[in-house]
Structure formats: structure tokens, C-alpha cells
Length: 48
Image 1: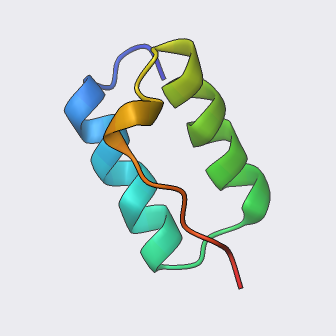
Image 2 (image 1 turned 90 degrees about the vertical axis):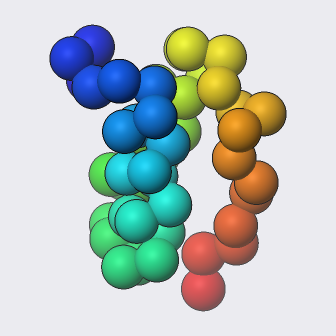
Image 3 (image 1 turned 90 degrees about the horizontal axis):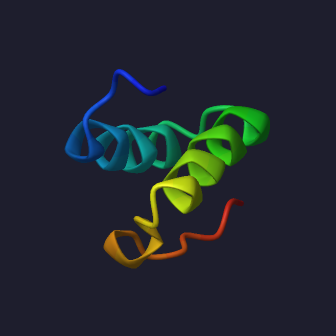
């Protein structure tokens, strides 16, 4: 994930949520967002 730009990582997060991809994959993105201190650029979206 180090090769992804911050912007692409954030876009990937929203797309993964939109497509309802696996919970584990979304968690992986969320962990990377946290590592980069980018949580403020995302809003928590509840998985159904």
C-alpha cells in the first residue's frame, strides 16, 4: 500500500465501501488510512 498516493487510497476506500467488498479488505484500507493519519478525510460508513 505504500505505493498508493493518499488520494488514491481514500478513493479506494470509498469505492470498496460502495461495492461492498469484503470486510477484511476494507479493514486493511482503514488500517492504512490510520497509519497515514488520514481518517479525518473519510467519514465512517456503516457496513450493512
